[in-house]
Length: 109
Image 1 (cartoon, helix red, strand yellow):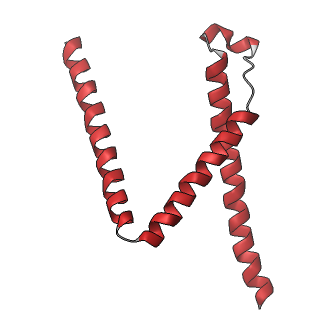
Image 2 (cartoon, rainbow, N blue to C red):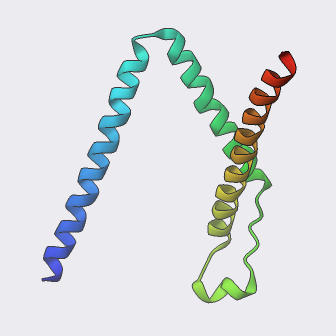
Image 3 (cartoon, rainbow, N blue to C red):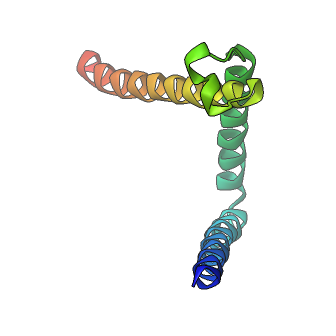
């Protein structure tokens, strides 16, 4: 019975991976049809990678004593810190963009 569950999990992983690759592939195909959109997309992806790099450099690799029982390594702690910092920076950026758009409408009238 356990081997059937493992096969089902593996099949699920393969289907999810195929669906993700298909979605990304169709998006890239559509993007390449218009070069202006391709350039904007590459700038967006590059910006995201820069934010992730900055977040990785800012994050600490310190493991708290209370988490040592979970066998967390320094690299895992650094990646988690990077994810949190990336989320915070992107959330602040999104809030700032909304505020800028709305306040510029108010003050332009």
